[in-house]
Image (cartoon, rainbow, N blue to C red; front, side):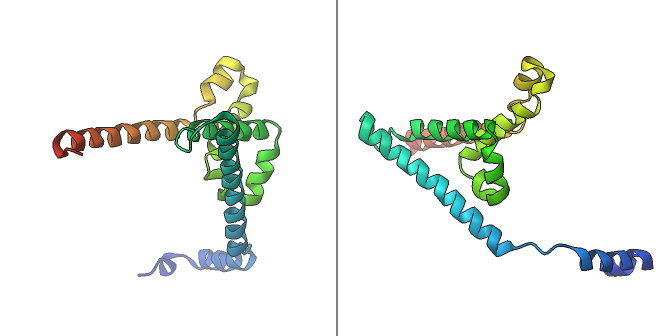
Length: 157
C-alpha cells in the first residue's frame, strides 16, 4: 500500500490543494547566491591573509589563525549592526558555511537572550547554538591528534 492510499479522501484533497498553492523555490538562483556570497566571504578572508603577510610579516602558515579571528570578529560586528542577518536572508548557506557563520551564530544567540540579563541571558545562551560546533571541533582535533601520534609512534612517520 502506498502512503497516498492510506489517506482519507479529505486528506488527499488537502494534499492536492496544498500542492496547488505551494510556492516554488528558485533552487538554481539560491544556489548561485550561496556560491557567490560564500566565495566573496572567502575572497575577503584571503585578502585579510595577504594583509597579515604583507604588513605584519606573517608567513602563509602563520597567517591563518589571525585571519580566522578577524573574519569571525567582522561577522560578529556585522551581526551586532544587523547587516549579517540581511546577508544571511539573501545568501542562505553561502553566509552560514564559512567561518563567519560561526561568529554570527554566537552573537545572534547572545542578542536574542539579552533581555534576560548579562549572566543568565547572554552568558548562559551565547554558545547554545555554537557550542556543538566547538565540541565536535575539539573532539575531532583530539581524535586526529591521537591518530597521528599513534601512527608516528608505530609507523615511523
